[in-house]
Length: 348
Image (cartoon, rainbow, N blue to C red; front, side, top):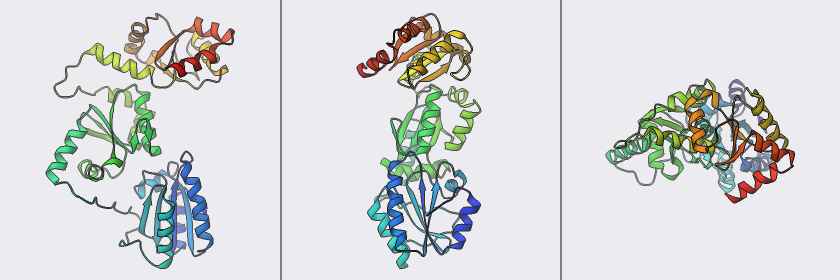
């Protein structure tokens, strides 16, 4: 079993082996480890088959070349061409497809060029084109910001979807979502509508903003928040600035179980009070998110009113204010900070 994350090495390995099975995996996906074991057992009885492992998120160029947006995901190659594929943790089907490859069957499909991913199977019943188009238009306009993903924001079913959810949440933006695994008609139709072959897909005001790479690039460049701020209220809705801000604040204080609103960042606090609270939370062993109130004046002023607390830093637990610098430091000094936070988590 060979691990490859460079596209050139990957293509060379395919060229050197007539038969190959490729496992696209991720460290966070527990079933991948089990399926590696299954592949090792299968490969032991079929030395002519090369078993290749590709870490999907680290080898983005390989994943993109084959439209991989889900793990575990398997591609079956004969003579450098894809003859079959498998999505998901299905050991019996993996075994069957492996045997078909060794036995000369192609999994029932025609071969494809190695630079292309296999087309997805068609749904058993096809929705009329006009009805599907109308439904897709309704879905992309369902919320000003709509994410089409695998799974849900609370339980993403692929690492790419998880990363985009986290990027949007870091911006404090409210968004709707649709699980494309629940409807193959939408899953295939939206690719054609958007002219974008993979998921997740993020829409802003009914228009495609981009997929995983574009969203993460915008987030890294500090551009995503300002772009999402262009979200317009849904048709027929009246935008109340105070309601919009309150909704945003509610999303921010609930972004993680423990949220610290501070001046600067945990790595580079811009005031001594913020630094002391960061140190206290870290000493308590708490995992926490943070928001730099110096970057957004609306949040800085609005949160004071929202929490009825006039100064920063402010610590929230499960969306409820724990307190400011003095309270947090008093709890830490008394050895009560961690217990208090855990009690609030359990209570809410």
